[in-house]
Length: 167
Image (cartoon, rainbow, N blue to C red; front, side):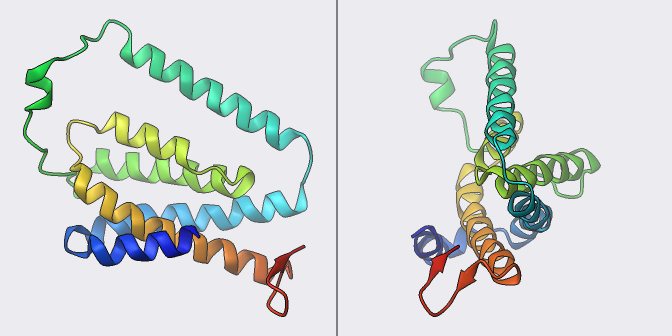
C-alpha cells in the first residue's frame, strides 16, 4: 500500500521534487536499509524490540531537551515565510543528511521503522527546510525504500512471486 501512496504523491507533487535532495536522502537511506534488513533476517531475536525502544526513548529525551525553555510561538510564528530550502553544497548539511539518513536506513532495515531519524532531521533543520519540497522528495525516498526492501527479500529468497507471501 505504501508503494501505491508514494507513487501517487510523486505524481501529484512532481513539480515540487528537488531531484538532488531526493538523491541525497535516498542514497544513504536505501544502502543502509539493505544492510539493516540483512542483519534483521540473520539476527532475529528480542534484542530488536529492545533496541527500538531504547532509540525511541533517546529521541524523546532529545526532543524534550531541545524544546525546554523554548517559547511557544504565537500568531507571528504562523506567519513566518517559507524557508528557501537546504543548501546541499554546505558540508554541514551534507554531513547531517548522511548521518540522519544512514541512521534511518539502519533503523528501518533492522526494525522496519525508519521514520524517527527522519523526524529528527526535519526538527533539526526546521528553520531552513522547505516543507513542501521535503514532502515531495520524501515520497521519492519512500518509493526507493519499498523497492530496496523488496530487492533484499528477493535476494534472500523471502519473497515468493508465485503466492506473494513473505516467509
